[in-house]
Image (tube, rainbow, N blue to C red; front, side):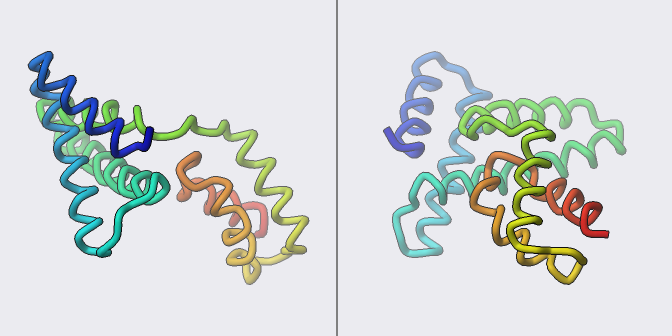
Length: 147
């Protein structure tokens, strides 16, 4: 079953159980997927859907940070709930040790020894870590290892 089918099934289940909060979050996700399909004029694969979900998760995380600074607990709770709903569709995240191990292997494989080589390392590990690790943290880790 594809991710889009799973999301569709979960929308139906949320409708049946009258879970308005989950239904709203899933409908936002479904709308974002459909918008991406219209924009790209193609049917999205599971990898493409994961990219859409990652983008939505990053937006929610940025909103959470802003709401914490503004002491808006009412909005904060809604965003955290949406993060929980969206995270259900993401693959299991790698631990920081696993990420560092993959980065170390990529650095030795590419022969990287300075910041100029960061692009080589990132392109090598992007497919392995996409959706399974926070790429911002991965970038910071690579920078610290190459500095």
